Image (cartoon, rainbow, N blue to C red; front, side):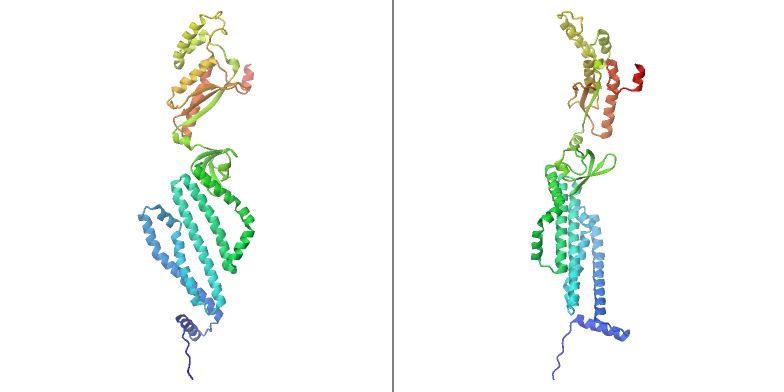
Length: 423
């Protein structure tokens, strides 16, 4: 009778040798379940060692390259650990191909280990894509342009989609669900899916509109009419915009509000190096009067309006020679204290080096109200710095509020206790 010798693989011979060794040396009879468990533990340990060795070899080289190269892409790939995820895939891919050799004799164990390995592969691969997307966003963040917003929102939307399909893939791996079944269920749940991702879709579309229309970018000083929010944009993502207000608090608004509500971007004004002053002073109309000779003589001593008073006096005197009863101030032409003060304000603003002479300087009267007649001052400072702007504006109105007394004008304000005492 001819004996048939069955050839054994190297792994099977190695497994039998391990069992024999434990049986002879330690008198331990390894059962199949215990041996399978130890086999899995040993296999996991080997994969970790492979991963550790690869990282120990590759990482020092990559670190040196980041110091040498000035390429932003390479540096951000290293910073966001894209290379780490890529290295993790090597031992995992090795495990996927070797599992069938290690556990082929036990079908249930093989299927369980293979499913777990596939899930780990899915997670690591998803992590790799996420980190690569973060790298793209970081590279464009360095530019801080309007394109950055489109790239950021598109990247975050892509993350939502990848997460969604990764979860579906995980379900298919765990429960061995056919992909046609998944597609059928998704078709039935389309409305629910759209409802879940509604805010993300709105934010994504808003981000693209902001990027295309160049409405705002990170670092811009903006004012949003909805909620009366003013501050510096710190972050724009697919759902929210973070704004640092000037009191250092953080306000968050939906990204869609940048498109659907009125937004004022102050950066174009800042880039011109000028900033508008537009403020008014309200005067008591009862203090308005025609200027007599004594007042005009006093006004002639004011340098800024000296030439104006001289030319106007000559012009008015010549005109009034042909006017009957010109001694009555309502007849003919006469200067008023509010009119002379308006000319004084114009000349005063034109004399200041802190006021732009290339832009319009307008001093105009606004309609009279129960609060008096406002005299509005409109001009531009030669700086857009907040600190310098406020200082210049304050200096101008400090002077005008005091100078108006020289023209016998009264400023309208709420009556105080001292005013009552002076009555």
